[in-house]
Image (cartoon, rainbow over all chains, first blue to last red; front, side, top):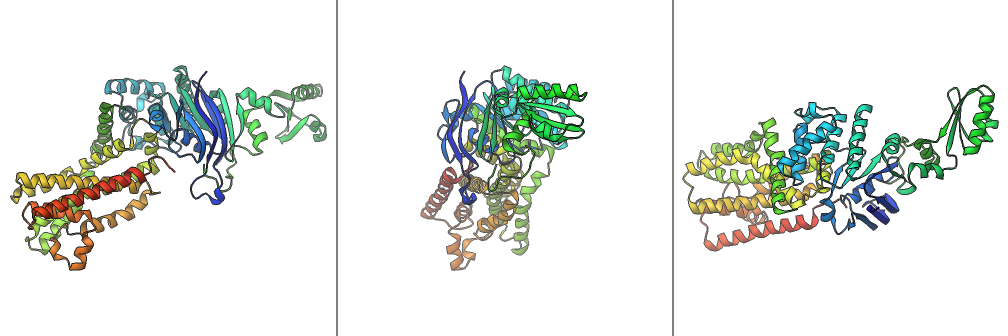
Length: 313
Length: 248
């Protein structure tokens, strides 16, 4: 297995950042090729900073980063020939129609017109955009515009795709269509660096995940690795009344509507579930979700909008 | 990227930023012709037709400068509002191809204005081989330095609103104060000296001299070409080293 992206003590301080606070601090990471690598974190965690450095859009302050074996600081041209990116909050040019967005992007990258036509048609089909192909971007919903941008880069010949929150604003069906297109890209052995706020998306698509908080990498590995590294890898949901003090002897307890949620180790969770069943209570038992892991590691929900002080994303 | 692919990218940008927007909104074509024709009308009224030829020559210079102004707005809008520049940065397209493609696309918008002024140029009997060559050469240099200047500035602007603020200043300093629409001799001595800091002064002298509106010696013409060329080269140099293709 090769590595698509490697960083070593990568650091980024934005010019003019108060107190010289770093948006990215001491990031050492190896991202394997041919997979989806998910980067999760709250706003301001450093996800976009990392993605933009790797996509050669942003200078690093110190440390090193290589993409497909090329240094991001000195060999940008070699990298750019082999990557494509959907930036966060990007929008297609509003005076183009859907087909033109994809087709002209491919021609802009240097593909010949015939190949651009074929790839455009395939990409529009894959993302269920064919019926909109003649529609002006100006008349599309926000979600459809994001889908068009995804179609644009997925249609390209790039080996690495950088997708910065690509499904933000999409409805659940459209999100799944983008997921399917991403999975198809992986079957073509392409690498995708995906940043997302949606933990279900990160878990559904990513082979490995990195969790960023305040510019630092706090957890990295496969979803199973992440579960194994948290203190309480199982969650037990009990509907009914059990004294909190009793539950606390099994693990960490949170109150939920109509019952309690207990995070516990495997043995304790089984014992707790059996005890609850013996008392005639309704119980569910399973591994913790990525959201639970995030909450335990970071201490806040991923949707917590409080930005880290003086750090840009 | 091969030369063939660079050319394909270049013309794709012309299509993308020039031909298609005009197809969807033909009024864009009126935009670039409005200012030079307004000046021409004003000069015609004030001079009772006597200085109309200056208006024709000045109109061409202003049209080429307006390409730069338009480019500055488009580049800033694409960079900040649509993140299109980031999409292009992370692709095989190089910065000079991107800027040249968009600058060429802006030229498409200026075609009606150039056509009108070209007709007047011929109508007034200015069209000789020498005057045409000088005119085309001077206009190309104006277009080039306006492009380099626009690109450099656009990479420092944080919002497209800043370009709206800057465009009138750009026009004032480069087309109204310098003797683009009138002979430099109309200006008082101190203003003539100040006008020497504007590259458009040299372009105007060249085109006015080439069509016989002003006497221009071979030495003066050579000096004007050298200074105009040096301004253009300096702005390209600044663009190459100071424009932000990759964010700091």
